[in-house]
Image 1 (cartoon, rainbow over the protein chains, first blue to last red):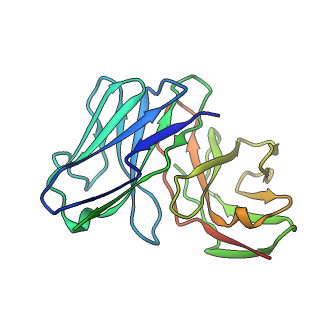
Image 2 (tube, rainbow over the protein chains, first blue to last red):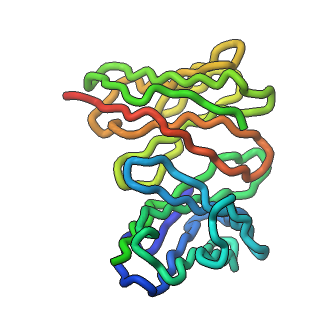
Length: 117
Length: 111
């Protein structure tokens, strides 16, 4: 089956620093990738939709200048949390869509746990 | 996308069939029913999806009622590794559409 990886799997950083999370589709090309955030004991919340070669579409309430998304190739999307604060500590998960007609399934990465001290 | 309603939690004995219900009474004609599960501290895993016919794969079976207003995910022989949060999601079929996750059902398989 399709495999999506994320790097790093966990990261601890100091308040005020920026953190970059990578999402890669390993065996397929992903025209669209999605970024989710999950706080403890809560469900996944969609942050933004990322299309290769164009600007990301952010969900209401998500600051685009704080959560920078780059989808420069068909196998890689990055999420940069800028000037991270403790309230940004969360589990960040990406998913990738192959972009083929009739293939509706999204495949999720294993997630990145961010802890901001 | 149509909203779904699932029980908050369920328990099932190991080796028995786990039947997880989902209500989606406002589903429209071109919307699919998707099931994902999330084991603790991992990304969601795709299980199965269907439009109106019952579906079966190596992981589970999906039974959709004739009026499509509800469905049941069946894990035929539950194991301890099936303990997870199960999400029922309704979405359209056109291209890469976002998935909107509800609270899901926390399924606990007991030895």
